[in-house]
Image 1: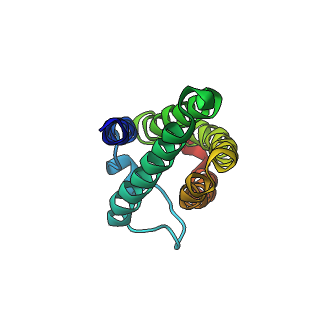
Image 2 (image 1 turned 120 degrees about the horizontal axis):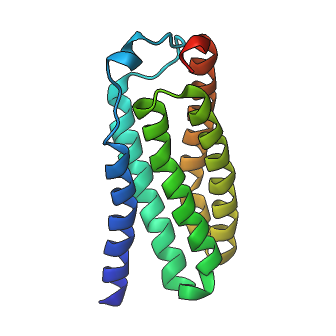
Length: 155
């Protein structure tokens, strides 16, 4: 039973971060920005992020179940990267600061990579589950940088 409870807690934490991120979504400002031709359609982001948050939740749960508080450092990294993940949407869509959002996402990428390595050391499958997240944030980082460069006067 405790395993199910910890899985639910993991999903609540991850989708709590997702919920915070949904408070700031593309708006008229974003529609007016210059974007590269390879910018994905807006409808794609919700299903991709839903899958990524589910994978993150399962990964964190596997680490927690395997070693509990002995994984405090890597689980702390996980929580910090979730905070930066949520902050990105506020910075980008809320504050309209493309430059600061890029700094946030670069730091986020480093923390995801560190978390992935830490998870891998505890439970290789947990590390593998973070690979799609790291890949998507790699793409999103390049997209953020490109949009910023195309809209220098915006921030």
